[in-house]
Length: 380
Ligand SMILES: *Cc1c(COP(=O)(O)O)cnc(C)c1O
Image (cartoon, rainbow, N blue to C red; front, side, top):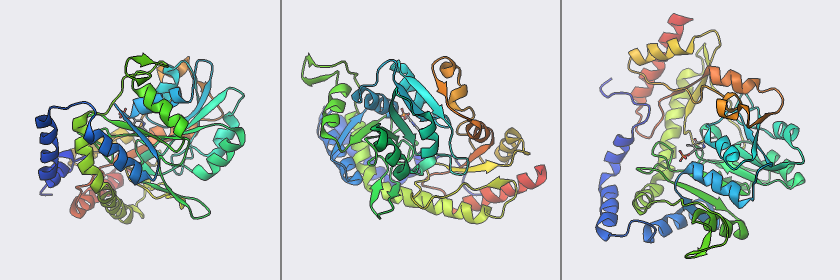
């Protein structure tokens, strides 16, 4: 290997786009306007355009986006919000922070996502929303989920922090972007996400203009008119500097995703026959934005040992996530578990993510796969 294999290569991507990014950032710094302004407005429009949706409000980060979405839906103490247990903590944390109850359900072990059946079992008279997470970049089965939630009049928040750019295909051939399908879509511009800023950032999108108005107000101290606060809100905004960076990067978002897909294609090809790891199911109803390339390790392997051996040969790997949310200490007294959550537990113990970013070369992927197969053979 003539270049170090990295889990994520933000510097490499920056170098490729340096001229444009430097210019955009320096313009903001020299311009003297650091909060709001033209770059934020332009980025909101570009993001709305990309998703084919009318209303986008940018905010401070993806976690804030989820919290503001719940606040706009009027979620309050005593309400229940259904969420998958196998996800990043942010998806569930915001529910409990508002005094509402996260209701944890299991995910499908073959594709990591929540499905309508699991949601159905968890619906009660207190259910006020469902948060669907499109984990690792592949959409959950939104058509089935929306059929069920529409029947019950329950709004759906999409946690699209990992899935920006993925397309969902409905049975009538309509195609919608992840985040533009449910009642409200949330995403994150954390640096390592598919559309990453050079700091924190997030966005909230909706087709519903009343909700859009509330979202805008809540994210800005509950005010429509300066110093007149109609509701309780928060202070959550995307920096002008980050918006300028994102205005450059959004033009390359499809290219970034293509690069991730090419890398995933090489991995799939080299690992299909591997014994000891399995490749999760790729669903026909969704394209995959490959925020992560995640495998399932056979339970007879010790994952920590595999990780260590890989690392000793220069192959980084990560576990997203080692503990399901229903077992996190903070939720033990605040959440409700519905049904059997064994897939979430099993996946937490067996998933392994390999390097995935826009700068991976085919040679690097060959080395990663060759090393993984060798380690699995020696340990098996
Ligand atoms: C990253 C992430 C978030 C939170 O985004 P931040 O910008 O870090 O607050 C929420 N949900 C999921 C699934 C994520 O991966």
